[in-house]
Image (cartoon, rainbow, N blue to C red; front, top):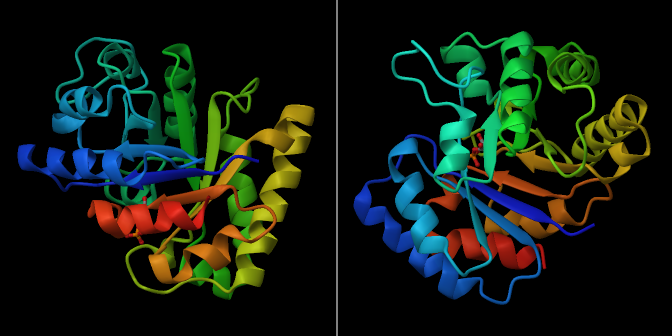
Length: 245
Ligand SMILES: O=C[C@H](O)COP(=O)(O)O
């Protein structure tokens, strides 16, 4: 399956950071994988312009479930599609924790993303405590069941497995642990979405770096990565992308 490498800039980036998009274009012109950059809302418009006529797609880091209305400070999926975003990250653990988002909210947002024609990158993953209790697959399975819309397809859904304890910590599960969870996600997607579940991309996220990318991308059910810190510098992100080619 063609790999997908997505960069989540989180709450980083000023107007001057457009230079990273420009540099990334230059460094990844011959890449044979799909590449997505998800800057903060404030830079999406500019990033779309910068990425025009390149193999980079631009995404957002969240959206509201409603199309419009009295929701101060929020941005709808339709607004994102309207300015040229093609992807939206949903259910990132930083939003689950700091904004109290539960699976029901994430499901509603994924439905909204699909309504607007966006690809939803739905994040799932267990905490350290849940892993230590041997419940990683059970937790991820519950999140998938409750937050993936009925009728989602490989054209509008990507799953990102991000163990919470691996995000921004430098800790990474063993290759066996990653493969075990990805294989379980693959099976659940097939059960839920039928044959098309086989083609939904499953990304790994959590402390992906140039030094570990190749080994992670070599795992059977890993179809790419959702990269945080290492996506902020074009040269570093391009190094990860080249490991996926
Ligand atoms: O969305 C990205 C993940 O939270 C991973 O972040 P990280 O690569 O900085 O660990």
